[in-house]
Length: 166
Image 1 (cartoon, rainbow, N blue to C red):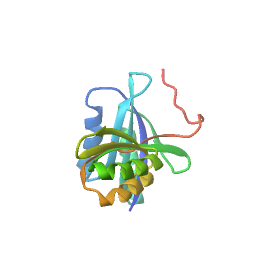
Image 2: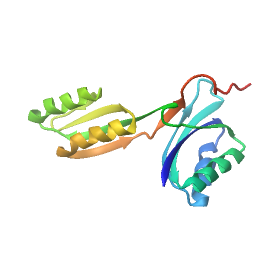
Image 3: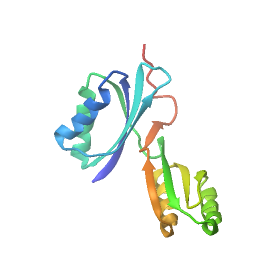
Image 4: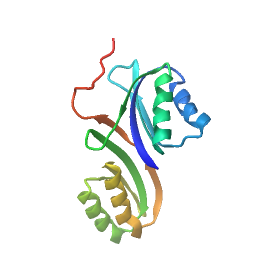
């Protein structure tokens, strides 16, 4: 089993995300990550999907996505040929005496402390999944109260494969 990230450019129509996720559920494929947002042109949405499976399953996923009417372009986000990022928000239990150590680790990873209360801290961190996992590993000595991950989003490097619509 391997993971593959796909960047889809789709028409920004009602139900497009439902049709795409429905394609996965009907065939019993798993979505590891799904993120979407409107592009610079509000008529289009960029969706990044990370799926896992063997070579045949991943190939089938791409073929089925290409058949969907709203899907205009599909790109594989290959390591080294693309830029991918994920955002996490992690709320940890942290007493006054523990805050400085947490702040030091957060600074090393170029994260931000976005909220502090008497007994907790919320940290925001953006980066590659490996970086986020390493950060969470260093926080293993603290009680993680809540964790939210956006899922991967990404673009291919360079301008040679940019699709211009109109």
